[in-house]
Length: 197
Image (cartoon, rainbow, N blue to C red; front, side, top):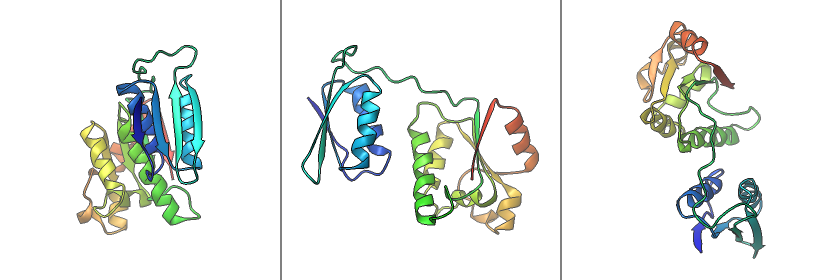
């Protein structure tokens, strides 16, 4: 039986680790996770793949075991059909997701960008506007994910007017400082734009 230890991993890492293990190693699979939300997330992911799932908890650790369901073999599970992002532009206008808790919002934006990195395909572009330009600063917890997305072919554009407003033009460490004409043309030229912030 293949085993992975996803304890103490931030969301959505346990789900991503389970997906990778299924695709590379196959079934049966045992996954150690922290109790609570990680159990629910990993269990729901596995069940969405038509797998038989059982959970045992001992207080500090939950053990999730999955085996073939009615239509699944013990071989490696085929990768899921991800929705392509090749024609998607994502506009981020805040350095956090949400407004009531800045610390939580920073964790969420980092998690969102980190999850994009784990996908097979990257979005066409990410546009940073308003306070979103602060994600391109070297001390931003999200800047490494933006660099990884660039390596995967994603264009990262940083609004020049916004960077100037916050007096951070010379500190931008990822992406290209751009202008509203280029940003507008990019957004109009692609089939889907997703706006966060």
